[in-house]
Image (cartoon, rainbow, N blue to C red; front, side, top):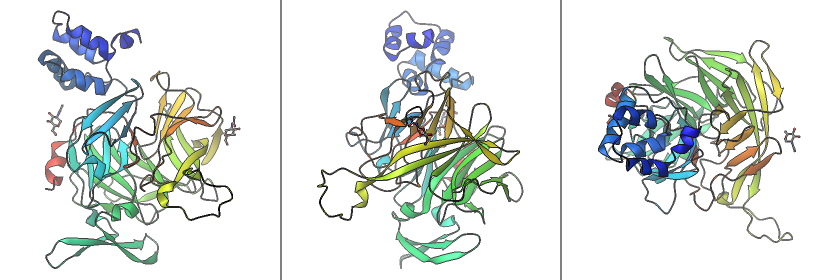
Length: 434
Ligand SMILES: *[C@@H]1O[C@H](CO)[C@@H](O)[C@H](O)[C@H]1NC(C)=O
Ligand SMILES: *[C@@H]1O[C@H](CO)[C@@H](O)[C@H](O)[C@H]1NC(C)=O
């Protein structure tokens, strides 16, 4: 720890004024930095850049990363994302490639990759640290989406069918190109396969929370019927686990020749109320987390005696009231209630649900849950207030992370764990669309 404190950013600049350090020593120093600082250090001068490049190419950089809050701000350009580092308690500005980040929906974040939906409802995955961006298969290859063309042959709007594996429960709806994303997407994940170096993107999408996935190099999304009502996913040992709104857990082997669903746990409750998350603890245990939110109205100095009025959707927001923790006993197929996270810390929201040990990231608070909105709440709707904060499981109080005045409520802020990972060039070349 002493070494880390010595290496605050200010001291790095001070170190630069010392007689030039040998590259091997620089490499060892840089290996101790968190990624945002590492990238900055790499751009300071040529010898630091050489050290940064060799650190990456030698695969020596393995420092566990503390998640950051990624958000946008009206004070900066449309292409700038702000990264608030919980470890350093400071903000880094990142300029991202087109289309402007402020025009996109953020629908997921895993392993340093964001998944975004642009104003044609098309998806990209982007690593905001390296700036690498990959266009994902077109939205019109999602099972329930069909393009409607105008006379000139351009896509004019989308037809969105309302069926899942077992039934069609409503007539199709029609949406403008930028509007479909409001209805279609729930949450997205980028799962890496360390053995092949490849990637699989998994989507939870509507109607009623179904799954589709695309692997590196695929030109279209593959639908996974008949399951539905999914709220969260996790990838463990090459297997996809998905939790439903009643706590059921289904698994899929996405690497098999045909992908079939295996129901591991049918349900853990009889009602739909809390938002459900699936998290793997550092011990390997699988946790089910239930998050209860209250619907609130932005306080507009309303007269208590005034008659109830209809509220604009932007005035409504969600506030986390209760978080319940369970360990999943896979053999008994039941939940075991946990009264505390002890040394652990959770990250929940539109990002991949994540569990860390506070011992490894001393800036984080043990037995606390770091929250943002998710797609089941109002993250994908424009609203003025957000459910972002640090929930203390000892007293059920929520503390602020970043002052709400600093961050734009749209697109909804999201947790991201910075990563320097690059995807295979094959995926890039095959999938790139102009
Ligand atoms: C916090 O919420 C949990 C779950 O509802 C409850 O069991 C616990 O008593 C609450 N703690 C306090 C201090 O209110
Ligand atoms: C990562 O990919 C980018 C281009 O997409 C490339 O410029 C860069 O050199 C790559 N970095 C590594 C370490 O492979």
